[in-house]
Amino acid sequence: MSDNWTAVAMAFIALFLVGGIVSFYKQGLKVGAVLLAALAALATTAAVLWW
Image 1 (cartoon, rainbow, N blue to C red):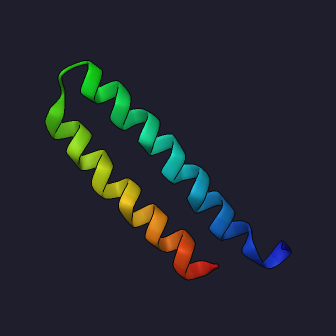
Image 2 (image 1 turned 90 degrees about the vertical axis):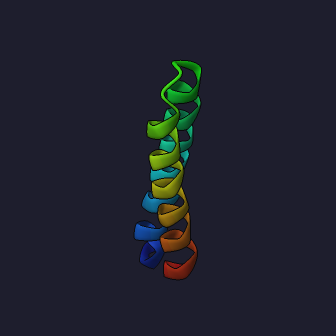
C-alpha cells in the first residue's frame, strides 16, 4: 500500500473536484463545472493508471 500513495492522493483530488462540479453547477457556472469535470476525469485516469 505504501507504493500507492500517489494513486490514493489522485483519487481524493478527483473526489474533491467532483464536489466542486456540484458546487459550480448549483451556482450556474456551467463552464467552470465542465472544466472541473475534465480535471476530475484526468485525476481519475491518473489514479487508475498509477495503481
